Length: 75
Picture 1 (spheres, rainbow, N blue to C red):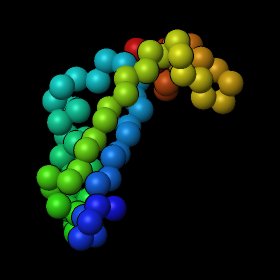
Picture 2: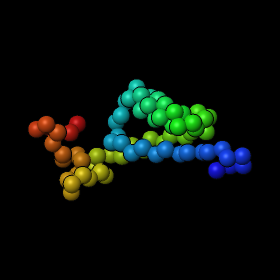
Picture 3: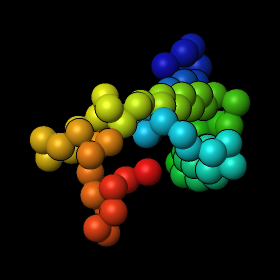
Picture 4: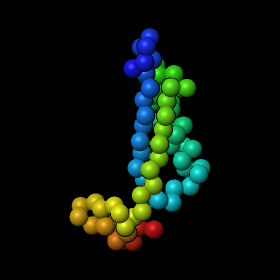
């Protein structure tokens, strides 16, 4: 917190590499709305999107590049 009680949240989102610019915008807009609804001023919010290659991400012990989604390998 800064002098006067100003808040400076930094939101970090990790996602698989390859998210489109349009989807990033949608995610940012949604996060901004939630934080603004909590009373945090728009100009105090920082959002960082970290794109992680699927070869560097594992879920349930399976590398994401090898995960099957609805019977198909994840793109």
